Image (cartoon, rainbow, N blue to C red; front, side, top):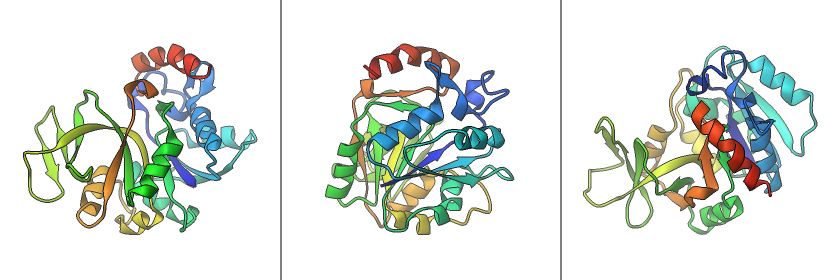
Length: 243
């Protein structure tokens, strides 16, 4: 298993904490988010982690090179152009092993979910992509049919909806948790990375011909720490997770 940690973002939701450092090096209980993610992935046997960089990229590279890590770390440099998650994943394509699944883990996500079970479900269901989701309130939802296949996306605030095929009145709305497993051939299905683009529209397009399913986790196994308020809440949550 190999992994991709998107760490290139500007971290605007975490201002003012990201005025002078990248989001990836913001700390929880004195530990940078990037280190938490690397250690979490290493514990489940990930042998290679690709990390993309842009905002304060030199700080991230220096941090990574000044420590020893339990797994191979490779850098995908987006210093010249921030490519969003889809474009960033495509740019990193040459760094991945073309025969192993890729686990994507957002750097601002803390997770105690059972990732090995997610990997097993991914394999057992024959998914091209498996998305970690939960049944929680959010502004944007992924929509799945009764066979747990991705069929759409919905923005509750704006009313905008995107469908894989034709709209349907019967679906299950679930919130994406920033963790996914994808087969390496997905990379060949992504557009060129000459401009930035998000990954969710790519999943919707890929789902027209391939199976994209989900892994449902419990709410108390996961936390998004993308804002100062959530980061403050995460301190005690992360501490309890380590016990």
